Image (cartoon, rainbow, N blue to C red; front, side, top):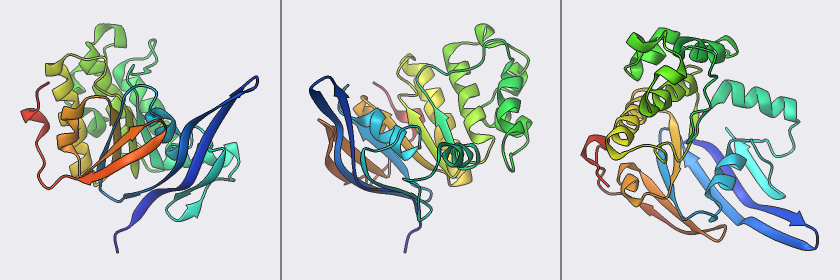
Length: 235
């Protein structure tokens, strides 16, 4: 039996504005396995980010259950969920979210200092080929370099789950490929379970499985029989 890291069972997420209720995700069930790389495809408004945020405990479902390592976390307190994220989940977002007054090194050190058993910060930055740029501030780094700092920051805690929300969305093709190579390497080297959401269908060639979403629902889940390497992608 393959080990399930995170699982959603019949989750719904609804938002109400006045008399109008909108279902952002509808009755989603899905399991992500240890060491698996999943790409979620869909247009804007399809529910991708909401789905990712619920799995990462940044948002709560209106109904349904979420399990992390077989533990039902749906009713955990905010404090308990914060501790879970701090110890077990890494995030990479489209716009980096680095602290501008801290160097690359300090941005990663800040996360390491609040992690249970982090890897050496030097190792995390070397993994993304940025050790030589460690004393530079975000404003002194290119977009691709900032995103690689964000990846180092996410992996320094040695997470079991890495959630990436449009990590190449603000980058040109060449820089996007470099960022995907960094994600590819840490996924393989540490057997981290990765979910990457994107509107870019080409990136799906990296995945073990591809989820296609529309209107808050999963339309299909397909397994890739053959993978491409990030360095071979072009869009």
